[in-house]
Amino acid sequence: VTAVPIVEYWFDFASTYSYLATARIEAAARAAGVVVEWKPFLLGPIFQRQGWNDSPFNLYPAKGKYMWRDLERSCARSSLPFRRPSVFPRNSVRAARMAMVGVDDGWVALFTQAVFHANFAEDRDIASAEVLVALLEGIGLSGREILARAESPELKPRLRQQTERAEMLGIFGAPSFVVAGELFWGNERLDQAIEWARSGASPR
Amino acid sequence: VTAVPIVEYWFDFASTYSYLATARIEAAARAAGVVVEWKPFLLGPIFQRQGWNDSPFNLYPAKGKYMWRDLERSCARSSLPFRRPSVFPRNSVRAARMAMVGVDDGWVALFTQAVFHANFAEDRDIASAEVLVALLEGIGLSGREILARAESPELKPRLRQQTERAEMLGIFGAPSFVVAGELFWGNERLDQAIEWARSGASPR
Image (cartoon, rainbow over all chains, first blue to last red; front, side, top):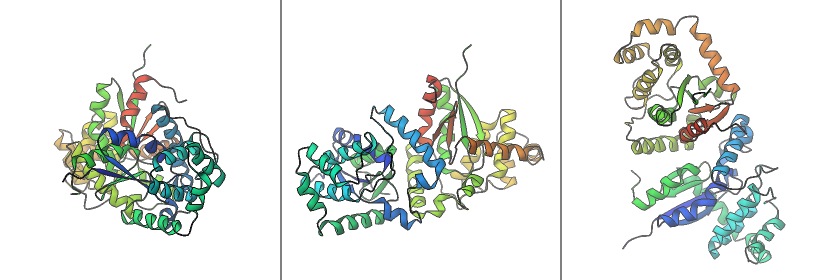
C-alpha cells in the first residue's frame, strides 16, 4: 500500500504571507505528486494566548514596516498583484467558516484564492458577508446558501476545534505546513514541506 | 565609474539564523561579484526597546520550539554541524567588539565564522574572554592584543553607535542585509539581497 503524500496547509485569511503561499501551493504540490489538505484556522486566539491583542506587525512597528515592503517585493517577484489593505488585519472569522464548508464540498482552493486576492490585491472588505457572497457567486457557487451553512450552529465549534488543533500542533503563525506532525512555518518553507512529504522523511 | 555592489551584513553572535548566513555569505557574494561589509551589532538593546528582556524565542515558547527544530533541519540541509547551545542567548558584547576590530584589520569574516561555529556547533561559551582569545589564536591572530583593543575606551562607543545605526535602518532582527538602504531580513533573504545589489535595483 502506497499512501499519497499529504501537506496540511494551515492559513488565516488575514495573514499577509498566506496570500503568497495560497497563490502557489496547489501548482507546487501537484508538480511533486503531493496532495494539499486545506486547514483554515484563526490566528487571533493563538496571538491572544501569547499576550497580543493585535497583529505583531501592528504591535511592533519596525517589523510591520519591513513586512509591507517585503510583501510588495515578494509579490513583484511572483508577478502577483498587490495593493496594501486599508484595514489590517481584517476579521477573518466568517471567511474561515465558509472555507470549512468549502473543504466539505471541494471548492476550498478556489474560494481561498479568491478571498486572498480580494483582500491583498483589491483592498476589499473580506469581513463583510456581502463581499464574501459576491466572491462565492463569482466562482459559480450559491453564495447565500453557503453563508447560511457557514453561520449555522454546527459550523462554529468546528472552526474553534480546528484552531485548538493548530495550537496543539505547535502552530504560532501563518502560513504553516504540517507533514506527518512535522511543522514548517512561512511561505519560504513551502518547498521544504512538499519535499518532506514526497520523500516520506520521518519526524526525527 | 562603476561602483562595486555592496551588501551590508548585520549580525549578532547570539542569533541562531545568523549562523546559517555567516557560513555562506562570502561564497554567495563572491560568486555574484558583490562585496560584503560585515556589521556586527547588538540585538539586545533593540529587543529591549520593543519591550523584550530576553530573546523572543525564549519569551514565546511555541516559536522557540519551532526555531530549534527548523534550525536543526536547515543545518542538515546545508551540511553544517549543529549542536544546540546549552545557554541561549549567549552574551555577544565582547565578541561583537572584537569583530569591530576585525573589520578594521580585515579578519572579520574568518573570526565571525569561528565564533558562530563555536557557539552553534560546539556549544562553547562565546561570552568568555578565554574562549574568544583561543578562537583568535586558532586563526593565527594575537588573541591577548586584540582582547585589549576590543576592551579599550575607544571601541565601546563605536559598537553602541553601530547598534543605533542598525535601529535607524529599521533593523529589528538578525541576520539582516542592507543594500543601498533597502532592508532584507532573515537567512532566506540573502540571495535576494545579493541579487538586489548586483542588479542595482533602486529602493522604489
